[in-house]
Length: 359
Length: 154
Image (cartoon, rainbow over all chains, first blue to last red; front, side, top):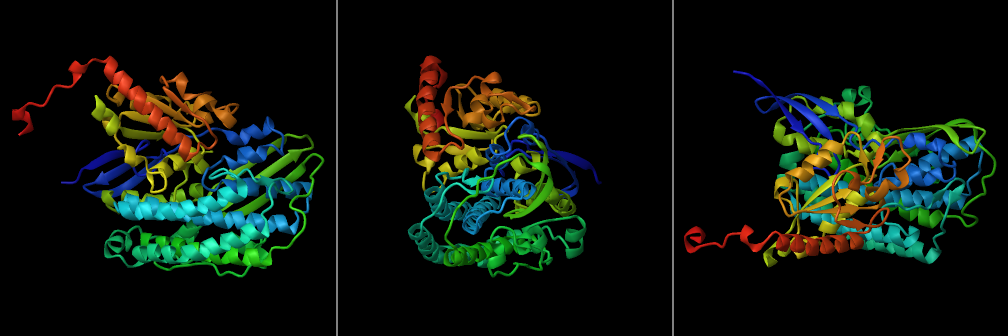
């Protein structure tokens, strides 16, 4: 006998700190369909550009999401700077790159912890977050904030970081290497972790491409695509390879993120070695007129920013396409055919950020 | 009841915050800050919770969910509103979809300042909430919790 059951998943649930709702249509334990419902944290902040000065709006843009806050602020600034034809000083670009990569490490460590929590590995959750605190300390020391940095401005950055602090950041990352390696080993080698992740939620290369997946979700399916290779900020002067895996399952997505943590450490070392001197910001005056796009590779994937100015100090339109929003179709296709017990795992491996998605 | 104060269970809900306060709430549970040393435990079930940690302002979509969660929690209960958004909507207070602070829907006992609230201040808020929880329990009278007899305990 087959009978369809609908199980509501969310919005308040222990898997994720954010509200996300799915109606899961099941036949026995197998998922036939997943219908997402969003809007629980919709604030409507894109329309706030009509009420806030375009230079003040950076701080609202940062609060699109508290995890990749700096990158949201930076993406908005990049788009406005293009409209205003502002030439950002090189030192500011390198500092932006530094903070982007620190954000990436903290976001990926956060994800490793949440993923471990989702498959019931409490110890690993705590271990990942302990490492993350060290990164947050560096962020707090250089910007003053732990999750909301407030250090990006239209035309540059707000704070400089002296050579001594930069040296200490590199030293700190070096000393974390051993612990990060141990953490990664558990994810890569441990038989219980493999059992929960390997072969679960497979997304093929073709599907990933056609459904428009972005970020680690796309790269874990074997598509080599990383917006950082388009040389925004200071990435043009940094050597790195795009991390890809071919498995397409939850395990591959975890591997991509683990390898990206190590990659970010290497990028930060290069940034510190190559950072030029000079100003950290250029004064941007005048009113924005015209429109522009900016693209940023966030920890969760490609984010796209669009601004249109009309010659006043208030922008006419601001639009963000966030990585989680782009990944939802791929996630739904992956959920179909899986069992109910794997739902938390699969949802977490796209690294959902609902605050971004709903804005 | 002294034991009440020693193991309060926490319920966390993100009303419409930017996520910043939420990850700080989670950070409180992890080794550096570790609120579990106060006997706190984060649970996903409102029916087993004593303290309601809520972040972000209220919007049309989640107003009913916040009410439901609050109503499902057993008495006595304490609400801790975390971050400036939970107080007034904060930086988003002028957004078209934000109704205002949490206090417009449910009674709030403790406000934690910050954008995003720092883990230290969240812990401070939780510790204050423990005192209020105790006072609320005392106000309800000691008869509420029957003593465990030998037969029940065996």
